[in-house]
Image 1 (tube, one colour):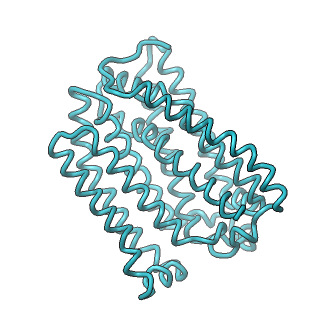
Image 2 (tube, rainbow, N blue to C red):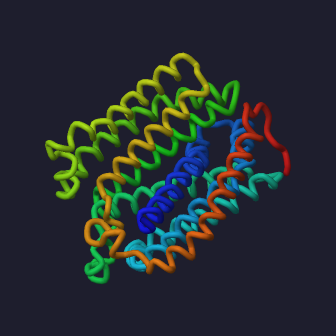
Image 3 (cartoon, one colour):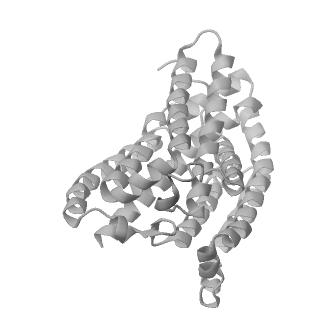
Length: 328
């Protein structure tokens, strides 16, 4: 039970990061479509909750290190280069964000760098995800240091870029008015078709390169009840397009969140119980029970605090952003 609990905690931290920092990355990706004053408003949308969003990534990484040390010590060497580049880009994105808010001149340059770093982060996260779901063999890492670079992982890298841009654009539809709102609504319609296309490609390609996933998804006993994932995702797409067509500001963002969740749950089902697909299970990689119990105390404190802080922040700063925040 402890192992399942820790697996669920890490999965929860990852999905919280994807949803919360995903729209921040998406905002950076879609900034080239904005005028300078619209960029000020877009930055004002993400400013109040900027710091808390990335905390979930830190908590997820720390939880993996403490609860599943074998998985952590295997995944880190397997993905050293993309992970180091991603962390560097995350730090650089933070620098661009802070300098952009304070700069009196050269804001366009900081905007460009913020966009480039956001695109790089999204691509690298997709790259690592694609390589991870293809499988991680601890014995072959030293002989093949570039296992993370495959046609499938490159494709998932681009898929995440479009996915985050859709998440960011619908968030801006929810939070803004006027010309920026209208631009992001039009962009979301366009981006949604690319995201759907990428999801279809992944759904077809992944089972053909990973026999375990093919057997799990297309076994006659599993096929019918697993259809709930694509069915809900399809309904969410219909809800997204209908709400965008009807100028509904609230629904599109949550439809995209549902689409992300269905993809996430589908991947989770595909890989469970492996934490190093498809070689090592969560039970084989877990720390001793005493360690899991000890660190669970810390998680039991930190996660509720983070949830309260996150919920309070988003509640306080709910509503439309009608003008840019000039300073803080």
